[in-house]
Image (cartoon, rainbow, N blue to C red; front, top):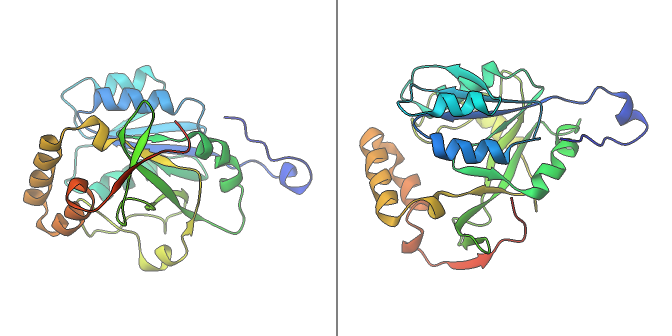
Length: 236
């Protein structure tokens, strides 16, 4: 990535380093697509593998990512914290294997991490349902939907031990998060999975963590809520 900080005081400062953090397990095909999308984004990609039985580790290594092998602890936040601790950058971009960085977000990352005012950003997300052209689900739940994904790499910015499947950050951190507009992450779940597969995922999640039911039902079965399908205004 080119980091255009311009002239003057900003140019005199060392540019912040950005680590992209990913956790993965048995997601070789999805991970390959993500790592291709991440080419040129930031200074390093850290992939934490939880014990895959497929080619996930080999895909990570082949793409030049730094692979960290850590047994799945049964808690998404704990595994993401492992990736955060392994990151060497000043900032972290947290993405999942079924997500992609949009063109505008890619262009704006240098500006966002150069900020002296903000330390944690919520990024807007498109829940993509189809491509050719790219289309997303618009509903009160799905758009606008801002997710906390771009953060300064400091110890206070770690997940807390609540919600095995949908962990959170400390309340004082959440209050300081800044929303970004017009530069998106793309969530490809609805495009990559059939309705039957999404319903099976919800059942598995709720068996593993009954407390996740409300969040699962809020976002995953989009067909059950009033919505429209609209064109994305950028690509990835």
